[in-house]
Image 1: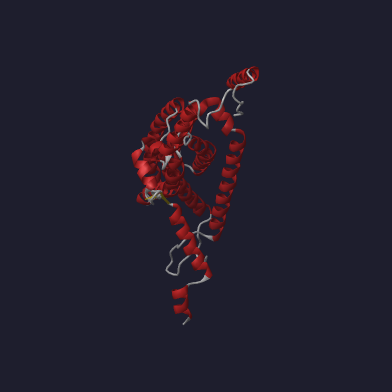
Image 2: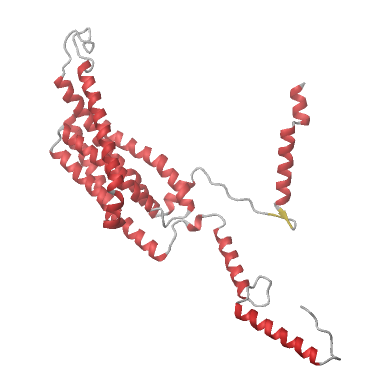
Length: 337
């Protein structure tokens, strides 16, 4: 019974919502015409902007593709660390890592503890280096080299690091390589990619950027995982083939950084806004501003603003008319405007 009563008569909350909707629908009708509804942002609006503008594609490459290299090098470091500590602390018969059928099923407790300590040390070292570079290096490098050269710096470091790992694949060399990659990605790549959004519209900043940060980043890590899974049969195979993929990606990022640096300088100098035509209502706002400026320039309009010289001329002319009327007693009465 209560359910039927609520469906028929509603509640105070539902009735207030209905009144609010009716008032909104009444406001949208002006002179018998309904105002056009604002176009909502679709789920794939970020993909549309990505496909339409090459500049947005370049931002995507700088923001995400380096994660393929980081994923490959990170997995390589973990594989080398596992083999290294498993050799230092082998699994002996009678330990928990020894199976009943006289076979090893994992790392020994000492090897696992050493591996855990190693990864903790890696996290501390990487975050400390990132913090130091962010405090003392990022602004100085961008200010001294400029955005165009700084964009080239990170992919060039990635290429050098991967070449070093390919020809000297030891644990602590890969450890240093991962430190450099992650620290410079936080301190150099992230600030420069954010600066690239300056000559873009709000549609690109909010719609395309969210798609790049969420789906693009996850997709790049998935691509890196596919590479590591394909060559995960041995550490030597992973280093040889994974480094080739990383070198190809780094070479492409160097070319893309040169392209984006030139485009950024061109757009900043010309004032061009990437994606400006995709914003809703942008054209109407510009037309309204131009109409207001035109009305302000026209004389004898209520919205026109007189200069000081025009005000003085109007006052002097009005005072002369009053004096002439006083000089002729039989004349007409003075009208005060």
